[in-house]
Image (tube, rainbow, N blue to C red; front, side, top):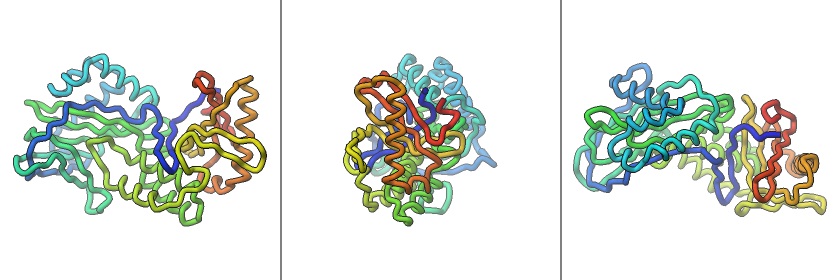
Length: 342
């Protein structure tokens, strides 16, 4: 079976991000004195800068289409120096490949920033509402006119967000980009956060720990665009006592009732259509046959169900992927079965 879907999660000590979760390139950071900045927020119903909106949509569509030459021409002079076309082409592949076909590319937020010199500062606070969790800290340079534009796109099991940092160099050009999934199975960071709180209140620490980590990753917008929401979720997770099964760093060793034990390389969540599955990767060495790997996956799922039946209150099922030490053999078992895992 081929492993499909996108996975999130982590253990109590660390957050394990899936490969290709975020791609970014940046100019050498300028540490110059500036302040007295302003950040004006726009909503989709009224874009005051159509040139900026058009530049954002055009750039994202070039990324999605894999047109590296066109995308490279859209970068600022600093970013073209720091990012060669071949590196950009590899990054674009890493963005599009894990996401799968993307559709419904659209703008959701715009933040236009005017920078004035003053005391030392390299961040600006923006907000798209009066709520404290909607505050955003963005990185800025000494350029007088800058902007951040948020573009979203839809894939089969998740929504992806492109955070575009623009600098005005006679025209709007891209200074940096961060791309990552922001909805899993239709659930946003806020949705997953609330689900984590519900599991915490039911004393389901195993479910809550995984869901808090998923919410943190869904709220991640990269190093230049920080959501206050993400820190609030981190603060709540820090107060949660992690269950024994998730204590320590990867790989974890799980012992259940019998003499057998399992070496867990990763645990998190994955989506199949609109359903969220608990997702586990276990190490298996030696690897006699795929049938042996499937049997061991099913044994782990059965043992987990006996030891932690609470998982069923948060997840539609479990996927376990057996992996050999070299990573050349992978076999996924899903219970209940899902078509996307075949």
